[in-house]
Image (cartoon, rainbow, N blue to C red; front, side):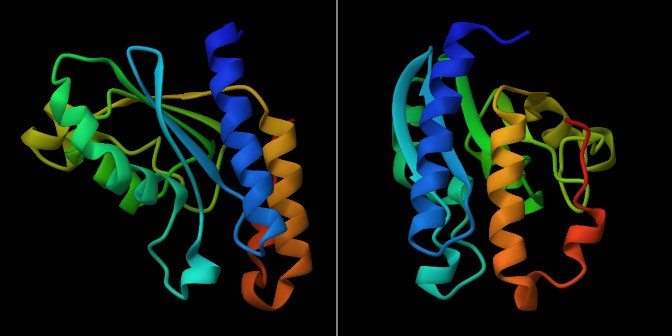
Length: 165
């Protein structure tokens, strides 16, 4: 089960995902904490920015990585409404994130199942833990709704985007 801290921070991430949906971006929100203190919130802005790299997690790390450097012994946790991709997981490793908590798994490209031993000793040493968190159903439904409304972009992605709720 999830503790109240997880619920509170993931709720903030889900609220940000809803904001993303409302402005036409992929509905993914992310929250970063250090020692259970809120340090930042960001959402996906790839559509509005016209790029492929403005993912919620990546954008958040760009905004707050300086805070992580100021607290090198802090426990850094990144909450996200969708399991992180390779780019965001890599940025998190380089930013010294200790743990990812994600609401909705990504069966098409999530990076939580990767074995860091396959990436080399540095990544193995700094690899964060990954765990599913609260609001799986809400995150999934929001993502699915966005994909259905934008089927021209997502194509057959939805065929594989099925998870156990």
